[in-house]
Image (cartoon, rainbow, N blue to C red; front, side, top):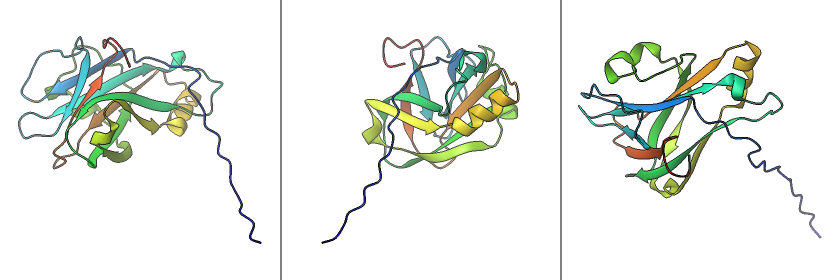
Length: 168
């Protein structure tokens, strides 16, 4: 008789959620503040691209945890397997962030993956455990993320912002 070995994995349900202190999207050719909208648009289209920015205050993040995740609720997604890039830096963004002043504040990507239409109505998540732990250990106050579809990705997604009525 053959023995079957099973490996158990822990599933950790979120203990604490921390809202960003600022979230917005910036849109190419649009010089208006988008931060009061209930959505965050992400798009790659010549002349109409959009990128999402989220800033978290690390003093609000509990130090007792070993695992940290970035979780965003996906309202719309037009395609499957669209490459997505998640970048980060230590800036505290505000409503002065626009398309024309965003490039100089983005650092190297911390994660690359894809987004797909089957994620609509659910959460897209990234494991940012080592990054958050490293930044908290260094005494950083803010951690900001930029989410973008790289050139040639062709995708469009709509994500809930903190102003959304539900699923922030």
